[in-house]
Picture (cartoon, one colour):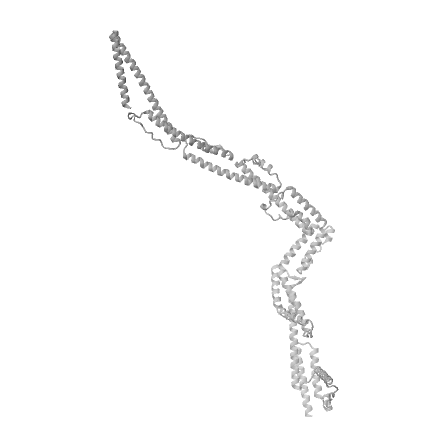
Length: 599
């Protein structure tokens, strides 16, 4: 390229020299004077100089413009790199002598600048998109612009990736906050809908009063903190109303159940208000049926309770009599005297005379019923033991009658049943002392705990048990006296038989005679007219028929001892006295026999 430029310069110099030579030739022919020639040549030189000067000036200006353009481009490039948070771009400096020049340098810088401008434009678009989303979400959340103005405003001097990432993070936070608020608003609206249904309120009217955007026909809901706070405050207010109405309806339901119980209201009539009584123990979140706590429904229940109250007033006497009967039945069931719980002044006559209000009397009777039921619970264990103890005493009485029956061992109808019952009765009677002792301890503990006597049908239970123990001891002593009497009689008979020999008793003789006669009759029947039994020897009969003095004394002593045994009470003193008397009689008998033998 330099050679070509040199060739062109040489060609221009050659052309100028040839032209000057031609001009010299023309001037020679014309005969132009030298002065004019010099002036013309000077003029040419000046014109060439001016031309050169113009060219140089234009070249300098172009160079200055190129340098300014390069400087401006470099400055813009530096600003773009700084705004995008990137390091400065190293633009290669071309050596003008090496054939480079400012134009090439400018061209290179301009191409780099164009690339950076494109990057900046793309980066700016990203910023605009993020900022638009941030502004829209901020409007939806109704956040104050002053809080995030510095964060969401466009700043072209800061288009760095760090700044873009910060905006993205802020966008994610706002999106999460929006999502949470949407969920919160929907949850509040659902709760409000449920409360309005239960309380019988207009849901649409309620939410529109909070904010018009809460209407279902409007898709976009207001998500401001103020709206959410109003929704929460409305929910709290409606829950308080629900709680108040719940308590009121619960009181009405309790009164209704009490009146139904008092007046024996039919089940069919009670079923009309089953949804009221079924919710008497329900919690606040369990009541979800529509219009359950509406004012109309509560007024309807109040009207029914008022009707039952009026009906109760007209049937108060009947209710009081019914309650008193119930009290008497409970007292009878727990073996308590009912007069102790029903004062005389609490009577129907007191109501008829106007001395006492029916409601007060009914309350007093109900209080007494509650008191009796409480006492019945405390007496239950002892009463169960009393019932078992009384049953055992009844079996003891039956066993005594059974033992006194002389024909109890006869093989008659039902004898084996009585034998089995007697065995069971003996086993049960053997447990009576332990049952009595346990019952006594229970009764004493009950009386010590409450400071009152345990009465059974008006009689102190401990006195009943003491009386039973006393009677049982008397029976036992009576049995011991009878055994002692039998023992003394047997001992007396044995002593008499040892002294005077065996004497048949009249009863045994009678049995023996009857037995002989029976045998004789049988022998006569089976002998077919055989001989009758022979009569006894007359002498022996005379001996037996004529008692001696010894026999008379024997029978006198025997009859006298029996007479003493029958006439005097059989106790230890009487038995000793009888033994002494018999001993004296026997001694007198022996002395009389000795004297007779001596004579």
